[in-house]
Image (cartoon, rainbow, N blue to C red; front, side):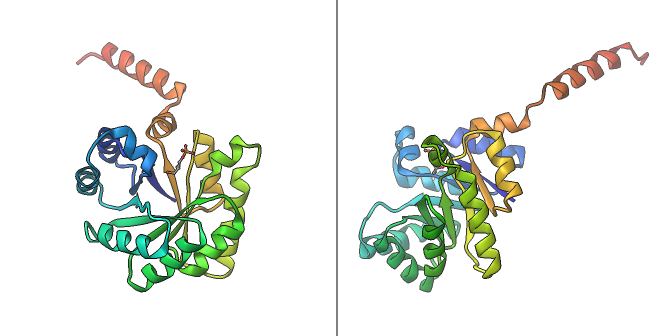
Length: 214
Ligand code: G3P
């Protein structure tokens, strides 16, 4: 399973990239707004840090506008993937963009039917937001399991990005479900590293090393 980082913060992206654990980046307008930086300059910087797919979101709500935006964004780098909202106009845009070889990530996906339609339209990725489903009392991960099963059964090329991840257990569940990608916030990646026995073990090894005559 590929791990993307779900942030627009350059420091977080740099750190995770140096750790060697990330394969790409996903952003959304809310994450970009938090950075208070000029959009194009920020995206260009991210593209230069990570050698992998970088999702940036189109904000038009009609197909013509989305296609125009997506074509322009994709010219910034061959690694740009354009996030398109899961609405009928969005899928109309995905079909046109697929024919133009522009990579898409259908976002705000909350059901298996939505994912099936996005795959039919030729989306490169679909992003089920599992944390937001958990928040309203639905088991988010179940739609991921179902999507992966359906995509495998029919050999859809569309990859499932598990998004809206809240904690390390979500990452394990995404991997067990056979998701192609989990997009993980920086704080959750940090937690994935942690185990108290690792810290205690390292401390003890270093103490014992001091006792060895050199
Ligand atoms: O990038 C999309 C998604 O990961 C957003 O997550 O935490 O705002 O539900 P969240």
